[in-house]
Image (cartoon, rainbow, N blue to C red; front, side):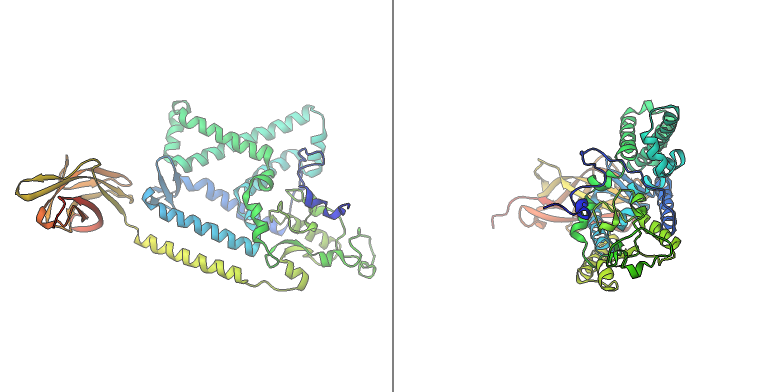
Length: 474
């Protein structure tokens, strides 16, 4: 059975031709109400992305994800590996939020917030329009032989792309190793830090490859989020949609003719101008319905509204709408699934807030020294040796720190340090200590002891450890 022409799109993607080769997309330069809104959002997010590593809050980088040193700053608050549970629940909140957002509003994240879309559409494509011109000029240049004009335009474009990719790679590195360290490496000279220069060049190459060649294929092929659409969307989800009932009418689309009564002839409002296809950055025809390639960028909405306005027809032939809204004029409302996601999201956010309030500024760990048994001293004293590690999560030094035994009567002595010491800001203090307890105060061969961490006379943290003693044969 032969596949109808309007169903062929389901068996292929717009960026692959019939021979299986790459079909380059040359979208028309968008303009319109939504495009202006997207520019404001994009430039704000770009400024946030480029400035965040260089903004300091209480001496802390605003955002940093130093995986190698396991140090993380979120909105100026330092987090350590000991706070990994907070990171996990934050990631789960992000997953649930994106799931809820997709169920309700489709792939709007991709068109408005995703860094790939913002860089591609608001930076690299705009440079392309500036150098090579709009859609038709770009297509003509692609078919043109390699003469002086083509070499000059392509060379200039790719050189600028490479410079921007290098700049993005530096900002990316600032998030990973810290902006202070990055600036120091730059002033020292990059060849003195080859271990950083090589990853920087690799990142530059990856970004250049993505934005100069792979482009919209990231959204169509590589991004897993696009694949989730088919699972998460339903007939009540708000997406960029073509109103086929209004556009097709009883007798389908028809090219526009002046002074023709389209309604009387049974034709819909779609004049088959293909402008919605020409402006699409992934090369799809939105009139075929929701497709995985659609990133909800709204370019087709702006273009269709412009066409409708020029022929004195109502706007909104392509708009944000659900399938139920188009078919039944049903207004948007929360479904049982959305309410479930909202409930789960609210619980998880409440849990995260509670954990943040309970998070201590100092993390203390006291562990018995591996391979060491207890020592039996005179006067029936049992001694155990421990290692301690204190992590200061704040931006200030914690001075006059001392450790005291709280659960048993006994003696706690630090090795190679005074009884009081300082834990540096965002640093670690570690060492060895002895704890001595009279055997009469112990119950059995394994005892849980409680140790307090004091700043001066103020208790700031407690921790526990296992204390070994002689086995009791009562």
